[in-house]
Amino acid sequence: MSKVKNFFVNASVDLQDVLLVQGAVDRRNHIALRSFSIIATFAFGAATFAGMSTDINGITQKTMGYFIGVLLAGLIFFLNKYIVPRHIKLLPVLLFAFEASLYSTGMYLTFVSSPNQLTITLFALFLAVPQLFAERPVRVNLLTVITALVFIVLYLVTDLKPASIRKQEFVNLGLFSMLGVVLGSYIKKALLERFVFEYRVKLANSKDRVMQLQQWKAMADIYVSMAQADLDTDSFSLVRTNEYIQESVRDEHIGFKKNLVNAMSATTAPDYLDDVLKFVDVSTLRDRLKNKRTITHEFKGVNFGWCRARFIAVRETEEEELHRVIFVVENINEQKNREAKLTTMAETDAMTGLYNRQAGSAKIKEMLHENGEGMFCLFDVDKFKSVNDNFGHQTGDEVIVATAKALRKAFRDRDVLMRLGGDEFVVFASGVVTEEIGAKIIQRFFTTLDETRIVGHEDYRISISLGAAFARKDVLFETLYEQADACTYESKKIAGKSFTFHRG
Image (cartoon, rainbow, N blue to C red; front, top):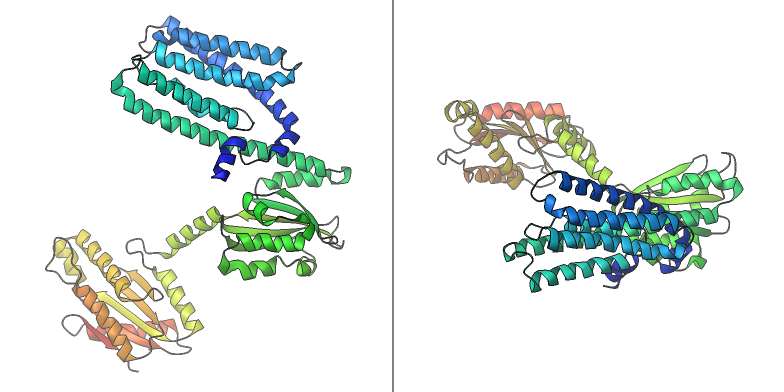
């Protein structure tokens, strides 16, 4: 609860940091107010002109409201341009006045100019106003909430707006005001953090490192955390951080090495922690970065999913002994998901979701190379051509899909299930080395097929002819295929579902 409150009041940025960058924030807001007041003046002016020069219902009646908006925005532009440069302390008052004028114009349009219409302008302002300026969000959030409450009160205690649209108006009010407050707080947080970051970079500047720090500034936008460290003194400074790192790095006096271990221990998924701790071992860093500019390690984080940690050597020349490093963590979750999706698409048969011929064959060959033992099964659907001829190709496709589903149900997750093409399938059950166990597994598959029904053809039963061969050490995929294929041919001589083992 305290974190939520801090987000909507201070944008989760320390008040002392905000005070340090207040000058830069004021300059930005002064420029932003000039731009937004010009935009508002011209926008309301265009709407006023349209209302005066046309007779379109819904615009003409709002002319006075738009004209009021022109006057207020124009007045604020004038005060911001001529008064604020000499009296900068008036800027916060003018920011408030501009936001209040926008809400006031929206309220006038809603309840006076067009009371019988659904509210549009005011709700758009609820979304836009909280995002205009860089500041602590508490003031504009309070203004937004107060405006929303005034809207509700006027709606309930007056008959200015018809009751028939009340429910829709209140839903829209809640949606747009809440979105505005949340997005506004988030954007203000990002803006304030950016100013604080730039302040810290400038604070660390020196003449001989100005180019280097500019590069860091550009790099920092890519990373979720960034630190520079002196390996000789074990000292460090956080150039960019986040709340999870901040919570674990509580004492800078214990040094970079221990703080780095604490931070990574707190933010790394348990299954990846041992390898991560080896990667961040500062005692071996000089050796690992010898003749290298950077080293990386990918891992899964607790808070950000897939991440890439990176050490960057800071040297004037490649021959210089390593004294300083930059440590960064980048969020690569989206990249990993994209790679996984592309890999799945490349390896998967589109109709069944099983491995395709190329990927399945490669997987089986890999398993044969690793342990060399298992049961290789090859089968096709009996009289599949007649299914297509008698029932149609759509039913034939349904038979293929149903066969694949039965395979998944009967075999284990670690078994390789592959569609060769058409009605031909291959299964490799790793570790199955006896006919007794193999027969039980195949019979389980046959039972599953017996229970399978094709919609619209409930009397039809999928029948297959299967051949199986057992893989021993150093056997080739091609050899197993030939053996199983010969057994499949023998099984076809038997009516109904049947299987034959190779006994060579």
